[in-house]
Image (cartoon, rainbow, N blue to C red; front, side, top):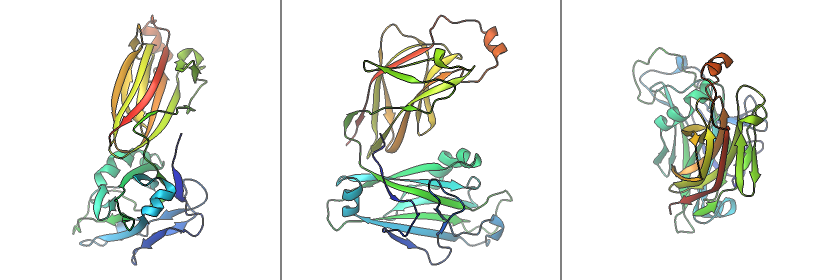
Length: 320
């Protein structure tokens, strides 16, 4: 279950304390949106051809929150701020960059952005980012979150001659309380394809390749964790799968962390590190994850496994 609260979707005049740079300010647009009809668009020129060499161009905006804002949307201990970002092309250093600071400290670096979102932006998808706001024990504390979109960040006299559009959009800004230290995770089924699905039987989640009505498909079991310092994902797995026919993949925020297959006699305990911030945890039962042809699969022969994954006691233990 996602415990976040949307604090701005840019559909109407915002009640939040936003401050925009006087030059190249961000502005509301109806051209692109993650949800609803509107989003914010960076004010930088849309093409790298407009960048003045030897000079950096900035389009900045700052969201100022106080402890009361955190308490209303999350809790007094702090929160995780998440937001969706989309670029018309992958940002390309040193032509352009996007970063976020919290009280003048970088909490989302350009390299973090590039490594997390480049592929998604090349596929014309939105990418979600999150930053941790650690509450200060003071009723007058302020948290200035600055979103920085910069062209030619190094102020170079000559830039690489590669395509690098500077159109950047942001939408769906949310706050969420930290997940409690040791929660049994509330899992949600969905994100399936070709008939695949998870079923819960007496506290055990079960997925089978037999339910897939095509040559390949998958079934997702998901949960969302918000943490200040990260922690550990713990679960018990009993699998009867054989790669490359089927397996169990673990994804964090859509990125593959591990893939497991084999023949388990009993449930086996598994533990994985969880990074800080917002993490969407996905248990994905996959049939033919490599999408091999029928001919190739036939040449590999048959398996002695039944193509089933069983998972139980899914929990997270988070560091303070």
